[in-house]
Length: 420
Image (cartoon, rainbow, N blue to C red; front, side, top):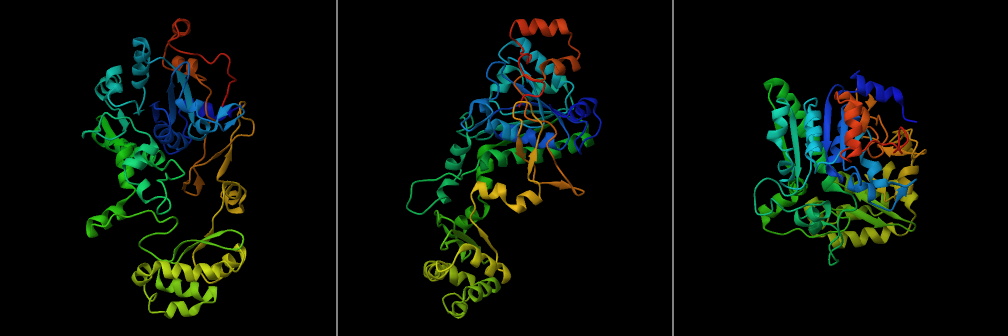
């Protein structure tokens, strides 16, 4: 069963975080928008998630993996929210959302380009109901340009934005980053924009519009690569674990695993050579400065790799840390989840949920005044809070029952009180 105290605090407006008292209408799906509203909810906002009454957010069907029948992807980015299932293709469904917007501070949408306007949920329509709204629109390729109307997903933007061109091994097929770096990055930029817009709204007393896109985020992840290209005309290529501007700055194979080494300056390089027992390399004219080491990267990597392969991972890791050389093991997720550092920081937060009794989610990597930002509600079952939200907005039970009968809304009759 969910923490009823948390839910009651959200409904009553009692402060439970820096954004307590802020109500967010979340008309998003997939990952970028939901990740934005996940963060806002963890910071104390009351987030109302609008979902299709039959299928809900697309990510409910993304899998496997599933956890007790629930999509792991949906669970990962939809804590801290209440779910209202309503049909936006029906005029009365749109009217329900506009009525809710009148009582909200923030409206977030990532519908297909132009679709919010066609539905009657564009900035002008929402502003007409709530003149102080902060309206955040997450797009694909941004406002304007020849690709403005094209759809966008994380891997498309990693491809179109240049990230895949510098990811993976040289001479191999293109590779995407193994995490949703575009979606989650765009979600974080949306939070930054919303927080700035809330401050501007409070100062100016007027509605604010925040626009951002996946493509803009993708290009923004490449600032020094693009600046380097503009300076030299040379197009960067994938380098595996290495970095083109520093050497040695890559993973090396030990006898029993891989070790990432990041010698970012001459002092650290000399310490590395000493710890490895190859002090002479630090005096070699080919490696005396970082520009020289970058120029002679392949020769240096071969010499270091030959030495590092002679011992085990933990032996080298201990030696390098004792010498104050930045290094880390290349770990898989089972090692990360079980690591004492992960446990010490309580990065995996348990949440009480009927649908997933053993639910644990990654918490926000943020502390305020020494207190970590924690999830407040488990991910909702589809339509779990439909009736409660509509009743809070002043709609009668009879009207809600009529909408339910005509399938405009979906009360969660067959869900537990706190389905995940």
